[in-house]
Image 1 (cartoon, rainbow, N blue to C red):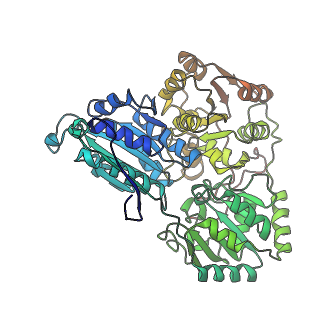
Image 2 (tube, helix red, strand yellow):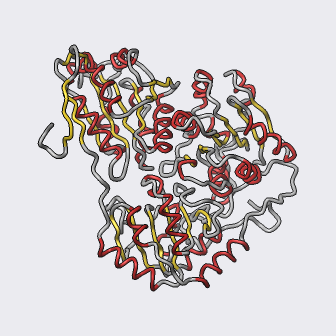
Image 3 (cartoon, rainbow, N blue to C red):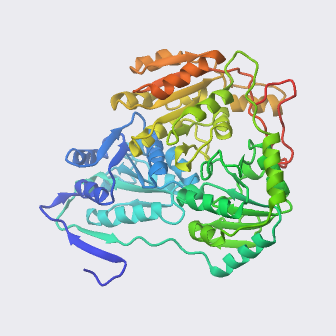
Length: 571
């Protein structure tokens, strides 16, 4: 037993000398890794050889980007570090979009890449790229392993960095000769995980005073509530204080979508009542959110009457974009528990609830065509509470955010900061391996789906019961909507009129499919979607002219929302 309090245990390798690649696999298993997502190649081949005798499971993807996004989805559901594996050169560069996605949304991922032998590094060898340098802006930390004996320490440090503080991705680059090097006496260090930093008592006192004096307080909750696994504390805070709540896209589910004090998502495509409440509030209690531009609209006019309490684990975010009256840096669970006291704001709550009813969504669209919000709302009403929805990026993503009522942020997986089209299908596969007991449904658009369509082969290979819903408007819908509204209907490269027959495409992967063209077919489609034992693709045809409303135009205040015209369908 070591005398260093940070090192609880130190033990030698129990057996014969091992190659670096075998040490890597053992180190991953000691970190609790049970599943790796990857794609093999030359430089990483020693690790794949070691996998043959490993206890952990490898899931073969058909593109490295899919593997990285699956690791991201796995991590969001479990709260554990997701792991992806790729070879050097294009294998490594194909991971970068996934790493950037995890970096922007603060998701803990460890990516391990093969590299050419150290003697060839810097010589422009076959499939050599400087992935250390390429990935540096989109990871928390990077390593190049030059000594096989250091593998256990580096692996453990990487997992600690990825999952501590504000989580994010870490890259480990492993040269082939290091992976093949024999290590005589490996030592593993199990380091005690540091407890989250606790908020300062003086700031909590300031927050309590601000809440007590406020007449129109509002909770503004973001993705940090999911990262901190703080949903219970958020709900208890809201129910004890009686303060209404709005959330960001990533914060959806931290309180039930059916909760009477939940006003909806705020921001560019937020609900009208949520944006109105923010603009009229006198105190904004920001919990794990970062005043993102898609949330605030014109920042100078965002919540103009409100004082700010800002809670976040990352001190760099507090006060970065908006001056705050109270900065609570540290564990938001502790902060919320210390601030949960009853308030006297009945008039404000009544106003918020009245607006919520006045501006409630309508689903009585008279057309015989499929109305995407109605499909999503009916699916939400009928799906089990533990159903996991993964989204791609575009109009369908915003409709899901608006019309699906989530009970947990871990059940809503979507690319927020980076806006990665193609996220949904591989993330759904990662989510299934994270929680095979829950039904997983990927909601996609015809544009997004084609970006990682090859992962239907992964669903087929492992017989995964993942469902896919494609809302097909034969266009890059969100870009088309903006060209309609802000570029004088000068449509440029948004038509997808030549889409494949998605049902026949699925059938080529031996996955059944069905088409939905009429509103009258929605009920049967949802019934099959929820009861099909294996995978299923549902191809939903929607009106190409349907837009997402409301919309805060770029550069405008959230009080200046554009809405559907009176004679148009309510969206």
